[in-house]
Image (cartoon, rainbow over all chains, first blue to last red; front, side, top):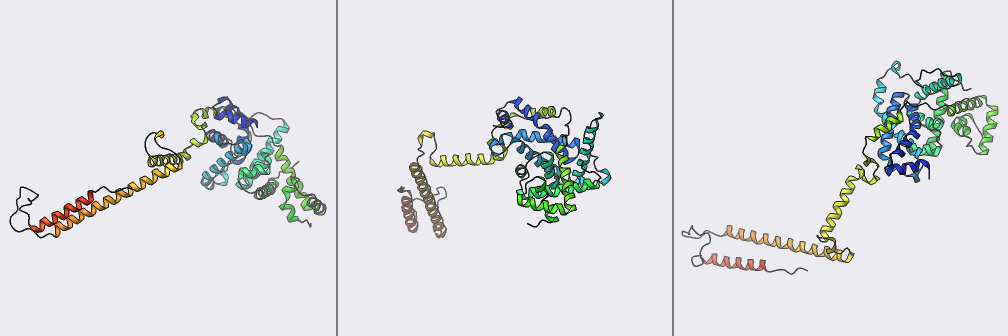
Length: 188
Length: 201
């Protein structure tokens, strides 16, 4: 049995330490997904907490036979992100371009070595480009290229046919490449 | 297969993920060797995808896990109860319970030992109850019919001549007029007929 599924079983039986282990194991994945989608560290933090609260409440409904826990968790996170996107759509429409959130990568003031600094800069640029994609294309690219899910897993998470998944990933990549080129970012 | 620039854009992900069939792959390579635009596009998008995959994950804020654990501790453990005990199933559970209650009541109230749950006995009980209800209904309608008949006859009766005693509501048989006596006899016969016990199938 998958280690996560074992932890979930223990959690459902009321084992607190298993829940803590599950949270520690997946916090970064959930936070990254939220951060890449929203582009805001504070919002991503709040959403990550909401995701785990929702997971906590619905943990008993997870069936290990239906797929990996990671896929289920990504599905829950994605649904919450969609809810959040719809909730904040009106606010975003009223925002002017000047008031667009400044994408921040790592809220740390520590001086980084060159390679890390380059990676951090690229990460920020990618984040900025992702923010310009439509939500459908953005989530497809994030799930495929940043979260490393395969097509079938993405199909389960997005609940769309495999053809649509492929099409969205394809268009998302092309669009992202175009935006990054406009920003002057070229792959090494 | 003739490959063209549109196909390169449409199937770019297949090219990058190496999911093209050998035949399509050969067609694409043949086209890309001739078309600089397609070769450049594939190299550019492929480079970006490769960098995306190598990007380190963003570090979550410190103590985020601890905050999450602390927040979930406030939620009662009921959240981990089996999926059936969720709010969305409450109405369904109540409906099922009510259905069973009604069925048991119809079959025969009392302790479970008193009634049999075999289909034959269930059918017999249900059949008996249906006939009982029907018989009660028929009797009630007959009673109503008698009452209305009495009422209509009383209202159509002409007032008796002469003064009538006010102290007693029912006139004495000796003083009652002949028409009234005949009516009383008919009424008595109707009441007797109505009180006769009916056979219940």
